[in-house]
Image (tube, rainbow, N blue to C red; front, side):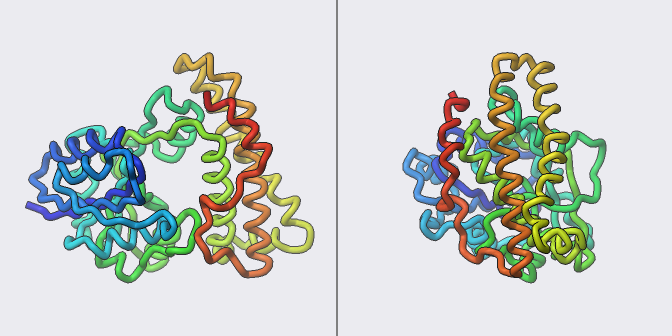
Length: 322
């Protein structure tokens, strides 16, 4: 029997948490699981559901929240070497999810694993295009660039030497992944360890996700990608982001349209231009601001993911959420 700590982050996850915990209880493989819930002031019944399934609940107030701080708190509390990181709305697809996610960690060279994320069909057809690109249904496990804090496993001893950055606004998992890779450790992508994971369409959510991902990504990769430092000079921070805009359109916009047509989401097609406008504006401003961070060698060191104001014109596009 293997002991595993499962660290779940929640904020008003009552809709999904019950099925998630029930599915964890059904997992095969003879695991002894320690459930640790890191909650940020839920008031919708999340805590009652967690306690019903025997979870240990720790509160991290929203005013003190950051992705890295929540993950570090969970890892500090965990008593086992094998730790699973899971978002409270990520539902394991099969009863072999945990076994598939943990098994590769027996290799001393493997520091972490990353499971597949399968979209909840119909919830956000445009996010489906993103998830299908990032987490393909490959045959067998593969060496991977990074793990994600939504559905992954990480050895606690490796985390102790590579703690999550508590001030970073995005890509806290990519940051740790890069440091583990730099030290010569492997991360395994395990398609069989799949969860259902989607978000409801929210233009503010789209903007924040892509803005911070783009901005933080520039600073994190500045020492490994020479083009980033070159692009940060003179007027290039205002011109170079256009390349990323065109790349993003090519990767996601047309695939989103294809998914709408193939999956029968015809009624959602009219939303696509508005969705893409928000995403590409976020990519442009995020890359621009990231390049300016590189230019001054000073990235934000305070978590402001939610407090950073969303541009007013994006708020006016909220009608696409209906």
